[in-house]
Length: 142
Image (tube, one colour):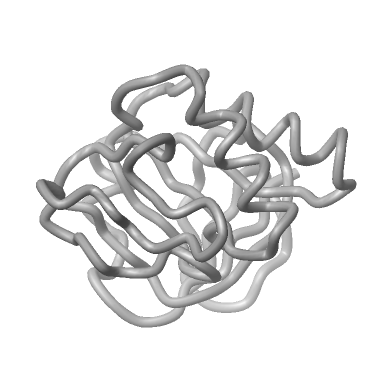
């Protein structure tokens, strides 16, 4: 499956989405059942969900295409996400169903500081409904 933030020539089925942060990424999709705070909810060095109250507690975000409605909590989540990008333990891409300035800021900071792009796309309800619940997804966002 391919997901495009802009019109591109990609192989496989495509969904169009609005690009919040450009970049390319691929990995197995990980749907979160609830919003997540990167600060206090994930391990900075491993990308594992550490929030004991989160349904996906113990699951690693590293290299996954993360699908969630939005983040939860502290504005410090942007710095944690940027550090996870730098450490190589961040998601491969993030797909959101609502705008999230905190997550976008983390990706933009990582692009500036680390020269590593983390693709963040905004999908409408019909696009979210078409995403697979498992398997590999490729994200191309220009």
